Image (cartoon, rainbow, N blue to C red; front, side, top):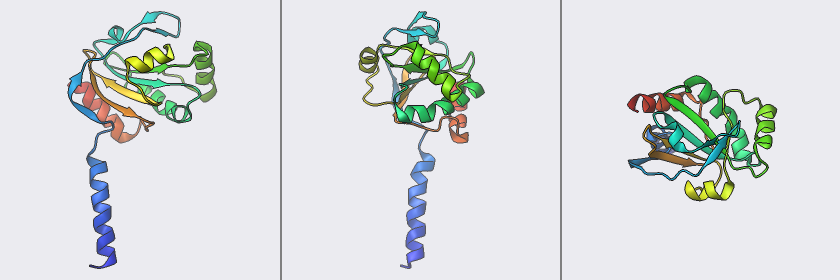
Length: 171
């Protein structure tokens, strides 16, 4: 076998699974979720039940998390493009310093389309079974977990936009 043939075959094998896999691993069946209380940017008490009827992309993050800082502009762009009555990006900060630190962070990096949400760190991490930041969970209109991704992503890439448009259409 020639070296070129071997490399071509290896590249084709490596590219196929990546092209076929979804943005985030999806569960075979939707899973029930707990929802700890959290507050929005004006201090209203909320839970995930307040978002039923919409597909939600829940992102658990913190201002001190470097990968979170990098992906936040892509979440902002995703919300700007698809956010509305059918879809909502819910960036849930677990910063102990409170909403002021989240507000400063949004101003610092130019976040314009995401609302602010804050939860108690340990309570949120336990309820959502988060072991690292960022963790992003896709939630259906009835409040069930469809899939999750631990680690950052480029949420507003063309492939991801298509994935979320399809997910929103399916409901």
